Amino acid sequence: GGASGAPSGGVFVKAWNSLRAAAPALCLLLGWSLPAAAHPHVFIDAIVEVIFDDEGRMEAVHEVWLLDYDYGDVLKTEADKLGNNDGRGTADELPLLLPNGKLAWMEQFNYFTRVTFAGRVVEHLAPESIDVRLERSRIAIEFTVPLAEPLPVTGDAGVQSCSMASSPASVRP
Image (cartoon, rainbow, N blue to C red; front, side):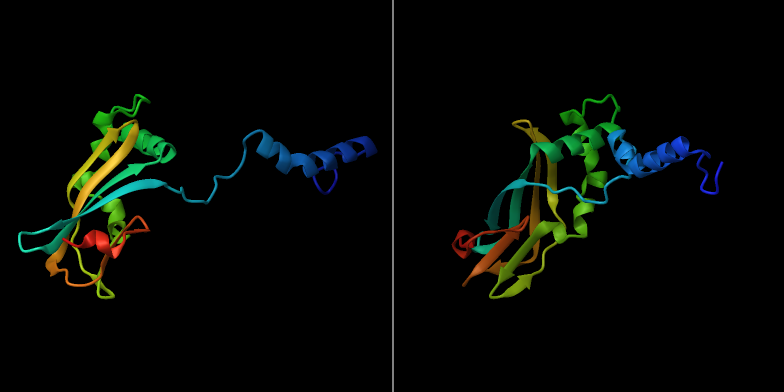
């Protein structure tokens, strides 16, 4: 063969060069591609409820997230791998996504929850009362985020969950 590894001879060289030029397209067509480096996007319907103590102070934020069907299927597959790996991803396997009963994968993002009061961020603790279940064929994640200290609500306060802002009026007792 030639220096480039191509066979010698005019017809063979043309065929070899055509094959080399078409190789990337053929790889894609045959599924020989590199994995994508993108992260999944998740669409969430969030229900946020502010919890007040007997003195009318904000003490926690209760959240229910309904994940979109596509990402729910991804999580069901992951739960199945942690469970009996039968390819079904059942509701009984969903709690396996919560190692030690915690939303550990969300900790680095502060549980996607932000509470503000008078323009400053209010500190909160890790979620408690965590539940993962199927609800109307969608994965529901339900949890309560307690504030570090009860907060007297005397002015504008806000809660953000999953990048969804609630109006200040919705957090008044």
